[in-house]
Every structure is written in structure tokens, then in C-alpha cells.
Length: 304
Ligand code: SF4
Image (cartoon, rainbow, N blue to C red):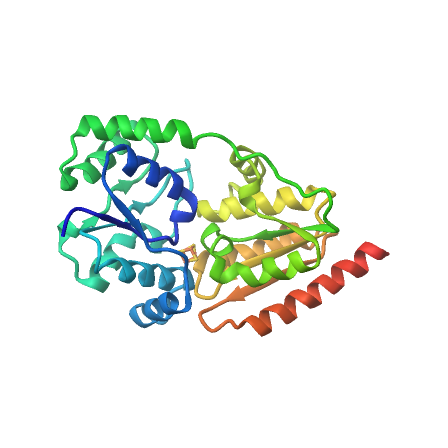
């Protein structure tokens, strides 16, 4: 088998995927993506993971499994921190170990750079950890990294459909709300109602972290800070008619932080809100019934 790096299209791919793809393209190494999550991937991941895992981790293992037969290497970075003072959850920090233990991969099949912070030394080591097993020179790696970084830095403008009847903010980890397998039903429902959906990725990240500063003392996890910043931001926007928080059963950070956000932001704002917890058994019918009921509540509020 020739060299081909498999990239699971799950978890932090939804944060950094564009950057990673650019980097591998710049070093001239072919990559394969695992594609969109589907029922088969979810079922396979569920059978591989321990029961207590959160759904995104189960999904991730299903994505890894789908790549093994066709790829010489699997890219599973260990990201423990990339924003000062906050950390990623233990499942993300231990991801290469979980993958290694689940699939019994030989060390050389797994490309798992350590991202402990954004310092040049960390990045230098991470680039080396990727390039060395692929036979790519450190110089090529560094050029590729800086090129990809330059392209990736731009902020995303806030989009808005001016013709929409209303705007609903859907908040949660990017790997849940950007994964079509989980968000398609919600998105389709609101589309059918001519309602615009907005998510944290529509907010420039600088603004999210400015809003999140209000919670620096209380929130430890970095991705939870993003959710907190986005919740605070959306609750201040007059054109947001309601907020839906989507989270995963088995997520330690969400189980604490969602309660905190309900108490400190959502209940104090005048916006209707709903929290949806998903697991591998979450069915379309039950989900849509809840979203419909929420939308009825929003309409009543809009008409008063
Ligand atoms: S933050 Fe929650 S959903 Fe994300 S990997 Fe950790 S436990 Fe899973």
C-alpha cells in the first residue's frame, strides 16, 4: 500500500479540518477523508467504544475504522490546549491512546502530533512528528505549516438571511452541530419554516472569546468556553428569536457547563431556549417533535 493519510471527519476535524487538509496538500502527501457520518459509522463506533463514551467519541472511532483498510497512516492529533488558560477534555487529550488501544495499531501507523499550546516550539515538534514518518523534510513541513496558517487565519463574517421569518441560534460542540448526521433534521425542519439558523461558527472567534472572558474564573474547558461565549453573544442579539443547545449524553464538561449557562445566561435572557441531549439512540421522530414544540413557543413569543 502506498502512503495515504486517513483523516477521520469527526471531533476536531470540524474545528481544524480546513487547516489540516491544506497542510497535507502543501507537503504533497495524499489524504483520504472518512466522509460524512452515517448510521453504519455510528453503529461501528458504538460497538468499538466503551458504553460510557460520549457520542462524538463513538462516532470518531467509527470514522477511524472506515479508513483502516485503505490508508497507510491515520492522523489523530493529541490536542490538549490551543487557547491560553483553558484545556481540552480528557477524551480529546487522550485520543491517540484511545485509538491505539482500540485498534491495536503499530506506532508508525498513527500520526499523532502533540499540540500542547500554540508556541513555536510546540508547533515545530508537531510538524516534525507528522513529517518524519511520512519521509517529508522538516523544511517542507515548516513551509507547509506557515502557508496553511496564513490562509486559515481569516475571520468568518456573520451571515444573515434577511428574508427569513426568524433566526434561531443552534449552539454546541462543532463536531455535533456541524455533523450532518446529528443536525440535518433540525436544519431541515427550520428550513421548511423559512427560519434562518446560525451557529457559533458564524461568529468571529475573537468576539466569541471576548464574550467568554466573563466566565474565565468558572470554566476550565476550552470548547466549553467557546460555547459559553457564543451563548452570551447570541442572547444579546435582538434578531435571535430562540436558542437551542445541542449536547451529548456522556459528556462530562457539558453536564456541568450547560447547567451553568442555563443559570447564568439563558434563564436571565428573554429568549426561549431548549437543551437537547443526543445519544446513539436519538431518533428523528422524537427530536422533531421537540423542535416543533419549541418553534411553537417561539412563534407565540414573536406574536405577543
Ligand atoms: S467535550 Fe464532551 S462531547 Fe467533546 S469529546 Fe469531551 S466528553 Fe466528548
